[in-house]
Structure formats: C-alpha cells, structure tokens
Amino acid sequence: MLPFKLVYSDDYYLPIGAHVFPAEKYRRIHERLLETGVAEEPDFVTPQPASDQDILLVHTSQYVHKLKTGTLSAREELEMEIPYSPELVRAFWMAAGGSILAAKHALNDRIAFNVGGGFHHAFPDHGEGFCMIHDVAVAIRRMQRDDKISRAMTVDCDVHQGNGTAAIFAGMRIPGAPLPSTGPAILNPAKPAKLRNEHAGDVFTISLHQANNYPAWKPPSSIDVDLPDEIGDDDYLGWLDNALSSGLRQFDPELICYIAGADPYREDQLGGLSLTIEGLKRRDELVFRAARARDIPVMVTFAGGYARNVNDTVAIHCNTVIAAREVMSP
Ligand SMILES: [Zn+2]
Image (cartoon, rainbow, N blue to C red; front, top):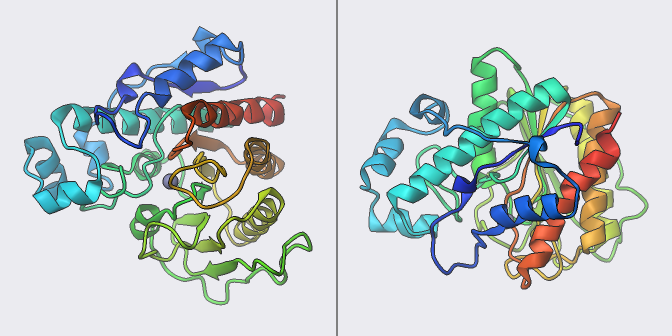
C-alpha cells in the first residue's frame, strides 16, 4: 500500500477522437501503476464530479452556461483546441472533482495525486490549449471556501506557461519582494534563462516553462522562469531549485499544488526542452523534498505530455508517483 491516495476515474477519458493529446493516458497510467506493483487497488479513490457551485468559484456564470448548453461560439471552440461535446463537459467536471478530492486527501495525508487534471490554460471566461475548466484553481478555491486553507502555492512544471493560473490568481505585488540574488553555479551562462517575479495574493504562482512556446501572451505569475530552448536536466533543476527556494522564502503556503507536466521531455512533440525521463523524476523529487522539508502538503496533477511514444508519457507520470513514495514515505 502507498502512504497516500491516488484519485482516479475511468471517466477522466477525454472524448476528443484522434488528437495529439493522448486521452487514453489516464487509463494507461492506472493500469501501469497496478501492473508494476507501484500501487494496489485500495490505493485508488474514486471522485465525484465537481458541482456547478464549485466550478463557479473560478469560472464565470456566462461561460458555465455556454458549456452546459452547448452554445460556445466557433471561435471559442477553436481556441479550446478540443472538440466540444456534453461528454467532454462531464469529463472536465470529473477532473475538477478529482482535484478537489485530491486536495482534501493531501491535507490529511501530506500528499495526494489526481491521476488527471492540471488544466492550467483554462481562464475564468474561456478555455484554451486543451483545457476547458481549471481543476486546480477550483480545488484551491473550494479548500479556501471550506476554511481548510487560506494560502496556496502552485508549482507548474509543464513545458507551457500556466497562463490560466496566472490570470485567475493575479493579485497584489509584494512590495520589494526579494529576487534570488544569484543563480546557482550549475547554470550554463551560454543559455541564460530569465526569471520574472511579479505579484502574489492569497495564491502564489510559480511557472517554469519554455519561453519560446505557447502561450504567446504569458500573463505574469508570481514567479515565471522563462527557459531557453533545449535546456537539459541540470540547468532545469538548478532553475527549479532557485524558483522554489525564492518562492518559499517569500510565501508560506498551506498547500502546494504541483502541476507535473510530462512535456519538458526531450521527445515531446509540443515541447522544446531536453529533459530526460530520469531528469523529470529528479524534478519530481526536488519538489517533494522542498515540500517535505517545510511540512507543506502537496496535491499533484499531471497536465500535458505528448511524447512521440505514449509509453514514455505514461512512464514519466508513473515516475512521479514513485518519486513521491520514495521521498514522502515515513
Ligand atoms: Zn503543456
């Protein structure tokens, strides 16, 4: 048995037909975790779909109405980049319910996974980049509404910037917030990354992403690390360590929401970074160690992953569970 819960539903499957997004990955992650003995059936818990009331904690009533009545404009559907259907709406409500349940378990058990979710490109009033509903934001707002937490931090390691997250949680700038004084020695001066440090309200947002990639417009997160193309394991880990230390010096969250995208992988079709599968597991360990050292609960969601071979995407996501078992076991 794992010392934490994995929230999963077969209904996470996104009915989007042939698509670069491997909608079957959730079912395959579930299977592989069982087949390899990483998890057993009792480690999994089944979510209920989020209620409309939960979704409305983040999204506008006009947008929710359009989704529930199938009245998105052609432009809005195009921007979402996945074909609308009532079944797709149900899958996103389920993903949001999964993140709510994972957040609850994380607060009890120090860590929990939603074997899905991480739809960080959804905005309050529209969907973008394969994301209809921002499940992580819904979970944070629900935990705040229930007085379980007041402050949360998002740590987004998907290769694409968390534009929806940044827009939803845009808050006040902390005056004189310290910037990391120097980069770690490990960083390669030939490939400088750019670190931007903007604002924080009750949710502090960190995003490490490829600068030269979707989304073209990147609304400011609390900390954005704009990485150059083709950055490898050691440089990436140096920047992640730097951003986490800086963020956790400035802000004291009661919950970390880790968005563990598989797409910084060097074989990813929609990414331009050069991390290895092993490097991505070290990334996961680094996040979990930082949380454990400060005794901050972590809720994990999986986000993107478009490897040429879908087995690699599944392996990267399963490794995040293994990294948590290694780091978070008592
Ligand atoms: Zn992505």
